[in-house]
Length: 259
Image 1 (cartoon, one colour):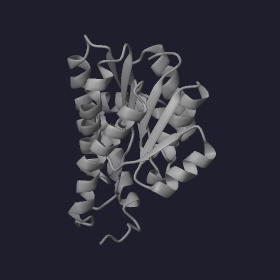
Image 2 (cartoon, one colour):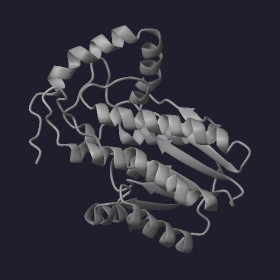
Image 3 (tube, rainbow, N blue to C red):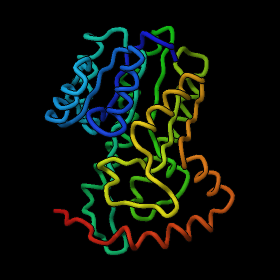
Image 4 (cartoon, helix red, strand yellow):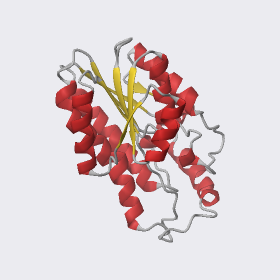
């Protein structure tokens, strides 16, 4: 990654991890563009950081992505970093079918389809840049099952595999593919969730860690407890599955009612 003068597009950039990453790039004097579905939250982000350029985009929708790309590539021709951060997660009871399929479909479309579609639409442009980076934000759960949210874990596993494949495909180009696999982060998405023995990481600390390791040239970034969690699962999958199994009933208490 260039040390300075980057033009960065961050999906899901109005809150949480995305906004923390946006601030990190802004602090480095980079030019930062964020997009999200919620116009009000984009306005709130811009009030906090007036330097931000904002666009409305639903990464689960093909037409919305095409509209974003056509605008960004005209307005910001120096774009050289794409951060696929937008994400969706629902906790649900698989045994008792507590989550209508449309919400599961939303997770698939946001977490995986959105990542692939954004890469696809911006890749020709990024390959024309002298130095470009695609940063995919996945999860430490990409390496293991997560019973309270199986679709989320599956989409992150898919995005992890996709990142590995396109990294190899692009190794002789100007585009570097980086993946960050966070642990549980203290955001709106994880409100009320706890994992035994693990403390939630703040979005700000996560953003600092990712940015630092980006500059060091790391291709797979495992911040905080994520590195330990992945290593433990590789060595002792039966133990981690048992721990997850004990935690699951607690996570399924007081589930929201879906339409």
